[in-house]
Image (cartoon, rainbow over all chains, first blue to last red; front, side, top):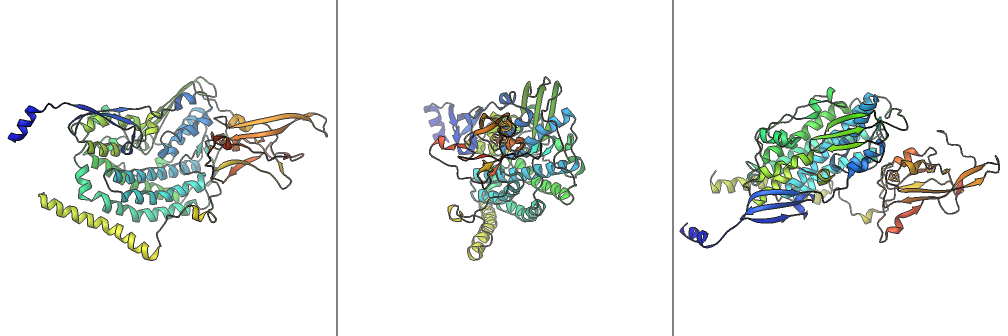
Length: 374
Length: 164
Ligand code: SF4
Ligand code: SF4
């Protein structure tokens, strides 16, 4: 102790700045964080965004509503189905297009499959960020089955552009129901392995429990949402609060936790995968008959005024807000992306923790960088 | 928990995790049942994409090298990013004696295409469709600008599109 005191007196120490990213494996994309450090302890995190800004909102002002949908794939590419659905629902609500039950059920099943796929990928990467490479392969192995389902029905694996105004682009493939059922049987066996491999591991627990605590008040103040906010006890599931598509007819729990630490955020997502499987199981057996796309006008114009639609993506509350002046393209369009809102909590979470904990915290808020930059 | 207690429980959970990885390793080593990875270029002969796979846009040509595109430019209008350019001209139709549009070249910029499918949906004559080729990698960007109508091809005479 005496020696340390001696050194502290003799050696001048100061806070310093360190860049993390924009090309860093732990930032999950092109994002820069300016860290203010005292030794290894974090004093301040300042995310610098905009490295992959593509001005999607501005681009949307010049194209028709039909064309906007394919740009939303490129926001949060892991929830592309829910993003498509948000724009489709917005236009349908504003112009009074009624879709039938079949379309609603198909959209709900697809959304929940996307949610599982997104959480699988997050789990895979979360393990990798904490130093467990095996999870990466296991997560991708199971996600592959969902990607196959998407590819067979929608034609593409990631940017699906499947929900269109007035329905869905293609009818379900004849193998769809069988493949989804096979997947659920498979994944119900594999999900307990996730717990055995990572959740119960003492090393992983030590790295996540009690790290990056956010209280409910802080979460609300930062405007955070989705699984990240639910881990702090903030009830914010859009599927429950403002049900859309077929969510009003299925039974599911809104997964909540109260601890607000990194492990709570982890736990919420794992349990959400169980709930998503429950939702799919309730719907998959009797998908109603009917058209997969209702007839719409060739040129779709929104009535003048403001329009808003919110959906729950895998990351939280995704909102589309459009101001229309009655033309075939919006006067102004704004996407309220969950990743951007969740990003605000990172600084508070990381105060006084170590650099290695920042990686864990960043991983548990599960941001997708193109969703932040838009 | 004590220092050594921590080490003991960490070892225990590590072993329980390694049971899974070990099982996959040994079971698959001997039975090869659950192996899902494939060596990509080796399976190229048997590799078949799903029917709806979106690889590129191609134009349907029948056995006489004739296509259904009457240069209506609907696909060009529908495309959100200008990946399609239609070059057309007018010629006197022998039957009716009136000038009629015909397709000179259907230019498709694969490098800009986002595979959204709006052009295929917009085409009233089903002249274009999805192709399943995905070997698009090339050294030069200009290789990706394609002409969809084959050289020397012509419009199917008198083709009436069923949807119109
Ligand atoms: S698929 Fe979409 S981006 Fe590609 S050419 Fe057709 S309309 Fe344009
Ligand atoms: S491909 Fe179809 S939409 Fe495009 S110009 Fe030809 S007929 Fe018209």
